[in-house]
Length: 73
Image (cartoon, rainbow, N blue to C red):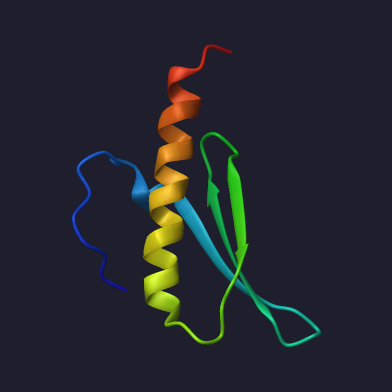
């Protein structure tokens, strides 16, 4: 899939994307940043395109990663 250019995310290729189908038929989108271990999951809305939901989730995920990088350990 092709995403719009994002200036802040240099290691997008290290993010694992999983689309999980639950027994109930619902689907989850899970993003995992492999270097940090940060994980974000969201139940998908069947009435909206998966690509659009994935773009929005990437935006939230990138903001969370930026915040985690700024927060001292």
